[in-house]
Length: 469
Image (cartoon, rainbow, N blue to C red; front, side, top):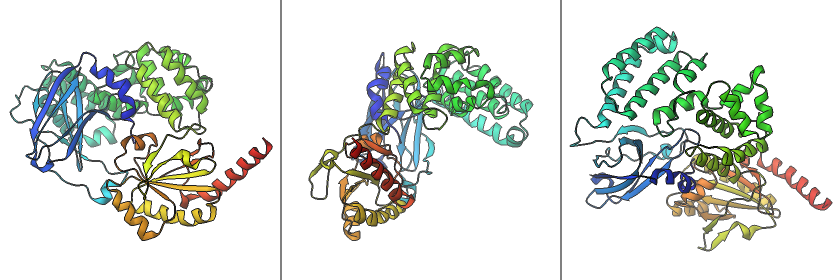
């Protein structure tokens, strides 16, 4: 799901430069002995979590954590059914209260559709002038206004109603000159304006983005940017007047893509942000060649003059290259049922069908059952390896023994980096690795959705090429 451990060397550095210490502390008996991790979302391109710090709640419920903060940001903490959030300013200390602990159900824990409910962290004893209260007040008023006017906004697309709401809110909150708050207002208004201008997004782009400073870390800026610019490069290329975008992208010419948007009036840094987002999204489509996209991103790494965008370019390249077909499969070093250390190198010379699963997931159980006949039939040429991502490996062991599965089971419990490396936050996930250790299918079909015939064709083609060589 996300790659925050990989981006720490590049992106956390930008948080640590000129950072001031902000301390979060509180008491939450419900969370006694549990670890809680605070994170932020540093950009709208990868839109992945960046850990800021982890603390273990003491047996008496107390906790304290010092965070390196160099600018005002919104931070988050995942707390089972809730996602706590607050705004943190550099150098300020906060006493916070957490929501009552509420464990997710098994279905919620393993559903790709479940999202924790947002929860404003309590701030007892904090002065009413604190930025958090201004933000929360504005958001409540904004939500109230849009709820009351849902039909004219979202059904009738009334620009007049939108302008009236913006004017009312702007008047009410005009006295607050805090830069973070002003940006928050501005992009809430941008989001509202986009709701009635989706057919002509250029109006919103030109008014709120094209010539404005990039607000990479601001959550509302990120949200509106993602709404407008997701898959933007591909969508633009479908216009007959913009067909050159495909040719330029496939040639790997990052600078020419940036110039294309600069010619539309986008300031350079924003044009680069749009292109990086477009390349990241475009890699997964059939519109552009993967080689061209990777070449363009490589050019971005050395050509961008923006200190905030350079680490993003590096991270996109790492992410796309990590699981690229033909690249070396990320290393695995895990314990098996016999408590022996197992690595992928031990299976060199055979194809490996690698799966990631959680034994509590019904979908995973169905796929594991479907592997049985494949493993039995193809074990001479195919090694099946399954990695259990359960919090408690014993649950997977019990399932293995109850079902009598014959292939290798590895303990991936709490292996955060492994999940990141194999993009396996949503299970089941499958990969095919060739005898040389390179990824052959990334991701591979599941056993119940055509893996066997796909593999047999690849195996025949691979043997034919080996014989010719």
